[in-house]
Amino acid sequence: MPPKRKQNAKELQKKLREKDAKMKELEAKLAAIEAAANQNKRGTSPTEQVQVAQKIKKARTKGRRKSTSPEDDDDLLKETKEMIAKAIDDPVFAVIKFSKGDCSRDKLAAYVLAYGKPNHGMTPKERNDWYRQFARFCGAELNRHRSGVQTAIKREMRVLYKSKTPHAMISVEDWERCLNRDLDETIRDDAELFEAYYDQIMTKATGTTERWNASHKGYFCLYNGHPPKKTGAFDYYVTPETEAYACLVLKGNWNRWNAQFQTTDKFPNYKQKALHHWPDDDVIEASDAIKARLYREQRGLDELTNLPDGWKADMQLPFEGPIPADKKAKKPNQVSTTLSAILAAVYWLFALLLTLFAHSLTPFCPLFIYRSSFRKC
Image (cartoon, rainbow, N blue to C red; front, side, top):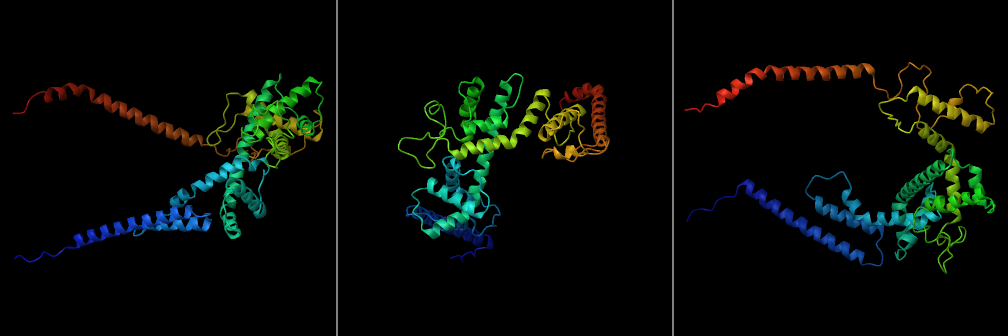
């Protein structure tokens, strides 16, 4: 009887790897069962969610190199983050427009949890843990939604700007009259102004089409429109906070939007590339002319009064770089002309050499074809 063959090191390592793989599969199944059991409980606290995420991640990465990206945790908390985004879009944004500081973030998180997951069944300690874990994410989602609403209002202002002949922005005083209802319906201009405020601005200011759309317009008033038998703070289609926020956006961005619209009208095909190109002199002069006019209007100066030194610094926009004192000085974000010329010369020299090399081989091409046509014996 031949003696038993001894197992070498490679076979032993292979068996150990197979056993580790089986253990990892069992641990992953156990973690999945625990996660399903936790979802069937009265409420899933953030502590339990983190524990389940850690168990599953530990089962997947045991015996391997630890990953630095928390993708597994993000996947497990994806449902909660989607709930937060949906709750902020509607109805929380109808009442809360800004969130700054820990107290306001906790209030925002409380509203999100109350309206996004009303039957959560959490204890006070679990709710505090939820606020601590997701309050900053709620603030970030609120900022994202508010930025989208402001952009939508800007588009509507652009449409109203182009609808007038000649093109002109509706003044802030007119929008404030709409907010205070200081209008005369017998005057055609006031009627058109309130129609734009009622139909266009408020549609975008609510942040969602479900709150104010064609089915509501003409049937409800702005100040008291709400579903039947629902008169809560979040039930009104257009809340007082929404109207105040819309006027705040219009007032805060009026000068900037007006300058942008006028520049776009004068140079419709111009697109500034901040990384590689500096604006042309005529574009800078047109922008300075608009800034000078706005400077005079804001300070009550007539056209004959000379502007003081350094007035451009007061009218400088946030995205503009420092104003160079010397026009011939190198502008910020400007590519050196010498470097561009050298790169262009190298490119064309390489292309020329490649072309000459290709032409030098042309007379010998028939010889190569002729020799390759003979069969080797």
